[in-house]
Each structure stands twice: as structure tokens, then as C-alpha cells.
Amino acid sequence: MPLYETVVVKVRPGSRKGPLVETDDDGRLTVYVREPAVDGKANAAVIRVLAEHFGVPRSRVELASGAGAHIKRFRIELPPARD
Image (tube, rainbow, N blue to C red; front, side, top):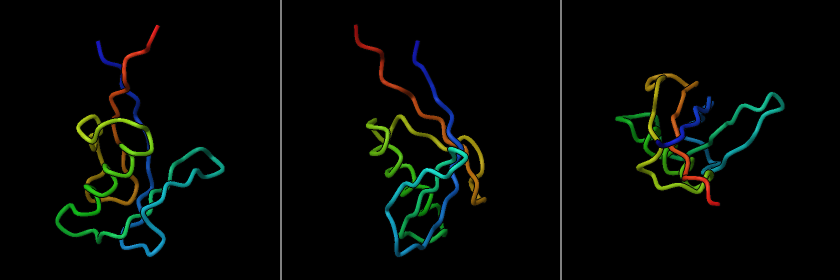
């Protein structure tokens, strides 16, 4: 059975700073991406950045809620634990 982690992310689309993941003092992630918040481009970019950050394939990262908001929840399927 796969294990999932839900992460809350603040997204900053259209940023010159991106792609970048920062951790705030409260533990929340802020993801900066260059893509604009148009036609899902920023959401797709955030999925790519989170997949790289957590070391999982993009297919294991999905937007759980907040498609049109700056605060989003992503569900990440974690790799199985190794013995």
C-alpha cells in the first residue's frame, strides 16, 4: 500500500526568483516558479519543482486542492521504505 504525504505550499507564480523551494519559519513551503498563473502553467511547474525537491517522479505528485489559489495542497506518493 503506497504512503502519501500532504504538503501545504504557498505558490509565487511569475517570479524571477524561480524555480526555487523555500521553507518558512512555520515549516510551510513557498515555491517560486517563473511560469504565469495562466491555464495551469504555474501548477504544472510547481509539480515539477516539488517532484525534484522530494526526489519522486512527477506522476507521484498531484494537486489535491487550491487550483486557483496561492495556497495549495499537494499529495505526494512516497517511495516504499527499503529494508
